[in-house]
Image 1 (cartoon, rainbow, N blue to C red):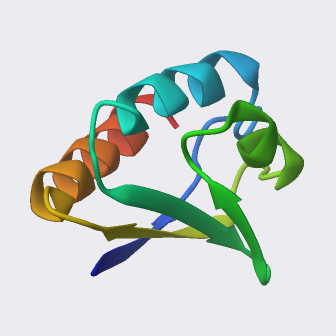
Image 2 (tube, rainbow, N blue to C red):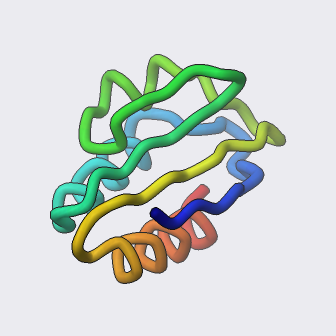
Length: 85
């Protein structure tokens, strides 16, 4: 299992457009991708789960990736977050 934390810098937080793009990216990997905020967990392959976390600008999330391609998935998700959120 790989894990990292990230602080959201987008002024609108995790909103519909980047959430949809993140789900699309997460689905490219066979590994499970989970995002945690304040004790709540969301499957990064489900847009409503991500939106339900209510992540705003300046909030820290934890991303956990587990599976056969976890190394690539972790790097891909991290790069996406840095470039988009």
